[in-house]
Length: 169
Image 1 (cartoon, one colour):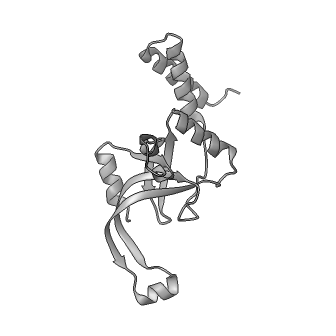
Image 2: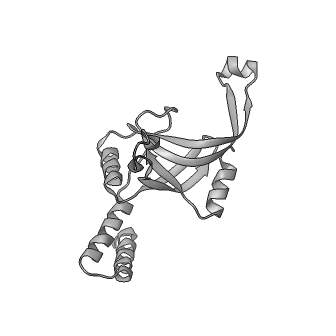
Image 3: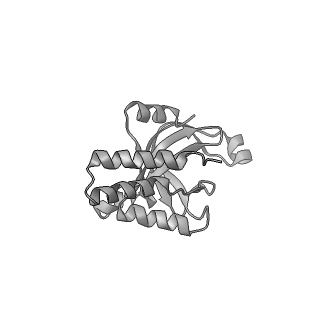
C-alpha cells in the first residue's frame, strides 16, 4: 500500500511518471535526466508495484528498445526513484527472522528507470512489445510524405483497428 496515494495523486493530476536510463546516470548532461519514456499504467498489488511503460521515439528511446529486444528476457531490470513519506523501523525480531530493517508505508514516486543492476533482483523487464513505437513511426512517416497531422492520426487509427480485428474465417 506504500504507492497507493502517490499513484492516485499522479492520475488525478493528469501526470505520468518519467522513465530514465539508470536513474539518469551521472547527471552530468541534460541527456542524462531526459526521459526515454513514461509509465502509462501504474498499479499496486500484494506482490508490489506493476508498471507498463512506453519508450519514446528518440534516439535514446530507440536504442533502449533495441537493447531490450535483443537481450534475453529479464536481462534488464527496473528501479524506482522515490521520496519516503512514512516509514517504520522493523522490530528486533523482524530484523532477525525476516532480514527486514525498515518498512516503507508511504512513498512519493518520482521516476522509474530501466537499469542494468536492479536493487531488487526480482524487478525485471518482463515483456517488450513493438506496437506503440511502430505506430508512432508510421504516423511520422505519413507526415513526412505530406499528410497533415489530423489525416495521419486518422490513418493510424484505422490501421490500428484493422490490426486488432480478428481475422475472418
